[in-house]
Length: 172
Image (cartoon, rainbow, N blue to C red; front, side):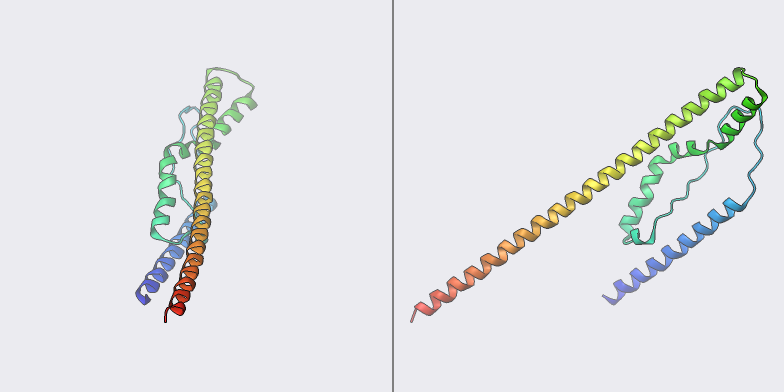
C-alpha cells in the first residue's frame, strides 16, 4: 500500500512538473514576437504542434492520462487549421488596398475551407465530450443499480439469519 502511495506521489510530482513546463513554454510563445509572413503566399502556414493542458484534478491515473493525450492526437490534423491569423492578415491587406483579384478570391476560398475544417474539429470534440458525458451518466446509473442490488442482498442476508436463528431456537 505504501509503495502504491509513493508511486501516486511520484506520478503527481511528474505531472506537476510537466504542467509547469507546458505553462512556461506557452508563456514564452506568447511573449515572443510573431514571425513575419510572406505577403504573396496563398498556402496555409505549416501545422504547429498543439499543447494540451489538463487541469490537475483530471490527472488521476496513467490510464486516464493516456486517454486525455490520445484524444488530441486524433484531432491534430484538424487542429492545425486553427492558425488562421496569417490568412486573415493577408485578406485584410487585400481589402485595405481595395483590390479584388484572383489572390483575394483564393484567400477567401482558403479561409472558408479552414473555417469548415475548424467547424468539423469543434463538432468532433463536442461529440466526443457528449459521449463521455453519456458514459459518466451510464456509470452513475450502474453504480446506483449496484448499490440497490447490494442493499437487497443485505436485506436478504438479514432475513436469512433471522430465519436460521428462529429454526435453531425452535429445535431442542
